[in-house]
Each structure stands twice: as structure tokens, then as C-alpha cells.
Image (tube, rainbow, N blue to C red; front, side, top):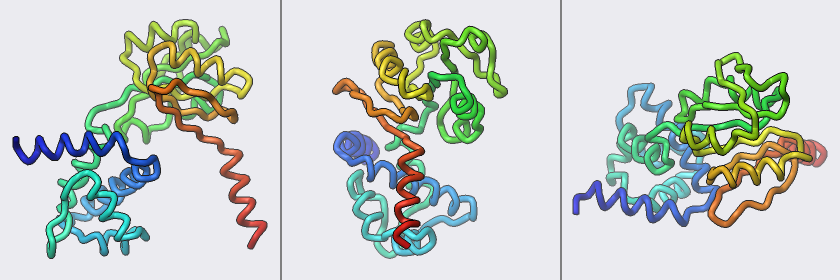
Length: 221
């Protein structure tokens, strides 16, 4: 077995058991490495990487060791190669097709955000139950479909990720439709806790909780 094949299998096995916090740090490392690559640098040590971007060098080494051996003692990490490996580990070596359910202000703003297109994601569809919106397009050209066609469009467009941007009162029903449509990964912006099936992945983004957390720290200072 080649070293690359072994490394790929090791990365797949490790990916199944890593924590969400570790996965989030891998995303941070990719951004840091992209910055260094843009500066024309070839190698960097964990200590220097930590110093440059206010990270923890021991944590960097521990996180990377989960997926294999990337660094060379006395030389450090090859920046471009490590970035490619982490992109592959994160599953971003191909474009992930995304649907947004809820074509209101938040959903439309997310659909038009250009950062997704440059980050390995493509918003291919919006869904809504408002007849005034169905059949229209966002400013970036993303079509708005009737939410009743969710399963059909997911299959045709090969959509893998759903983003919920509906009011809290509708979120549970929309989430159920997402899972029934075959979506295994859902990002939920609605301020409500959902109960996903065991074979799916759910990430909640509650903006109000984040603001309340900031208020807590301000109040303590």
C-alpha cells in the first residue's frame, strides 16, 4: 500500500471520531495556511504558526497528529501540501451543493454571499412557501422553488447540505422535510432546538445566544 493510500485511509478513519471543536480548528488552520501561501512561504513550524495567528502550538500538533504525520523535524510543515491535506480531510476537495430553505432576508443574503462560492460551497436553490417569492431569483441568480418540491430538487440538483432560515415556528417541520428529502447535513439558523435522526448531522447557529454571551462578558468586565 502506498503512503498516500495509507494516509488517506487514516484520515478517513480519524475523521469519524474527531470532535466538532477539532474540525473547527482544522478550518482555521486552512485559512492560516492560505494566508502564508499567499505570502510565498514554503514551510512553517507549529510554534511559528501559533505565534503568527495566536494559536496553541501543542494543540496544532495534537490536531494534525490525529490524521497522520505531516511535519518534518527541524523543517516544519510544507504549507501548500498541508493545506491540500486539510482541505481533503474537511471534504472540501470538491464543491458541496447547498439549498437554503427560507427565502426571506437572511436566506436571500446567504444565497448572495460570494464567500461560499470561493470556499468550496455552491448555493444552488432557495425554497419558500410564499407564492410571491416562488419562481423569482436572488440577486446572485439563485432560483426560489416551492418548498413542496424540496425532495425533487434535492435529487435533481444533487444537493447535500440544507440551511434552515425560517421562523422558529416552522423550523421543526422544515427540518423534517430536509431529512425526508435525503439531506444528511443541516445548518439551522432558526432559534429552536431540533431533534435530528441518528444518521444525520445538525449544526445550530443561534445569533441571539451569541449576542447574549457577549453581553454576559461585557456585564462582568
